[in-house]
View (cartoon, one colour):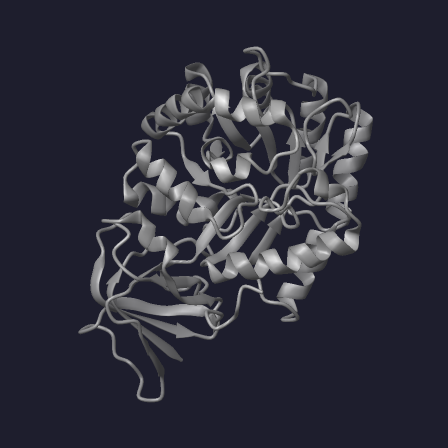
Length: 388
């Protein structure tokens, strides 16, 4: 048994901090959590005292891509590289994310089912990495957006691709419905209602969820009306769509860094795409501010800015979210969109022992999340690994 002691514990439920707390871990699960005076530490337990560091649930990157690596020049085009190069990057990116405190990561499109290969390797203890929850191949129209997507045109092709994805190990389905920036003030959308409906029907038939790349407009509205379970990005979501998301309980995964992280924009190969992000920056921020006030449940994703979930958390606090709301988005709500809310995302007895410690108090300074100390996933420590 392990006993983690901390001056302050944020359990991810939204409750006030637990001061001078102890978490008992037995195997891969949390056995008990409570004030130090109420938790009896067994004499043979391994005591991990993080002192003044804050303990919180392991972070969950709600929108990621395994081999996509934005610090590389022309990084979107690099998805055309040989699979061996993509696999090497994927292994490196897993280490970077885990070292940054991400214990579960949700992947929204990968080539060659490399995410399944990596998931098997992580689960088998061959390589270190976050827990992998993946859509495998993202599905897109041949004419549509999606450098990490696989073309599937027409309802029957989508039916076949969805079934193939599940056969090869997909946890859920990802479809690319709209563009990623506005063009001349409009949002292109590339899947018909019949195609979206087919993806939803085939996934729901086997009890799985569908997530859609949809930044706004008619494409996003179609997704909500046809039963898509989660919206990715939603940069230009309209008020009526927000109301419908609240009514239907549809989650949104926010990835604002694509518009706000200038270093990432500068690595793009396409000047028009880069300009689209810069031009849409102000409107995107106004829309995300509405999301924060709307009551929509949202999670946070880096969209492959590996190790950079803290950037997304910082951006959200600048846009009006409280530090506690942002922490919940990066933990509890992330677990919910993965269908893992009963297993992780909060520090409660019976759940996986996924937890981290950070130097400082993230309720006062969200940048404390960048100063990760302890990293534990399912009761195993990983903070000693290097990023490379």
